[in-house]
Length: 90
Image 1 (tube, rainbow, N blue to C red):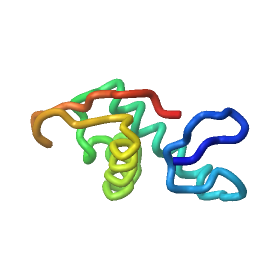
Image 2 (image 1 turned 180 degrees about the vertical axis):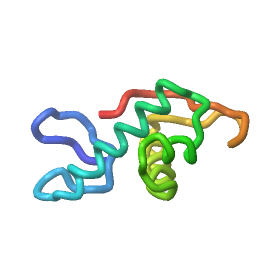
Image 3 (image 1 turned 120 degrees about the vertical axis):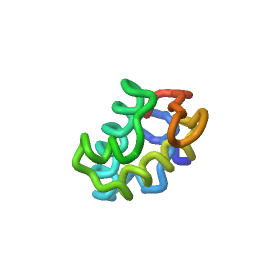
Image 4 (image 1 turned 90 degrees about the vertical axis):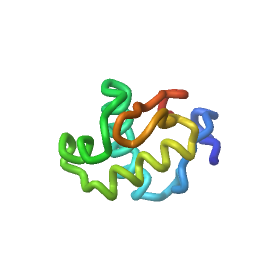
């Protein structure tokens, strides 16, 4: 975890916050994935990929990062379960 010097908030990200262009392309993907999970708790990674045009591997990677940060958690099975939002994306 990193602390953003400008806002003082903890940023749960594996990418450095300064002088790193990758950080600016990763966050929008994560926000899109999070928004779909938030509005449709029973959505699957495959459906997210279909709706966003992102690859399934990319969606699964973003879901993994959201889970690692404690933002989301899966309740139930992959097929019949749903997503639980623990906190908003920073």
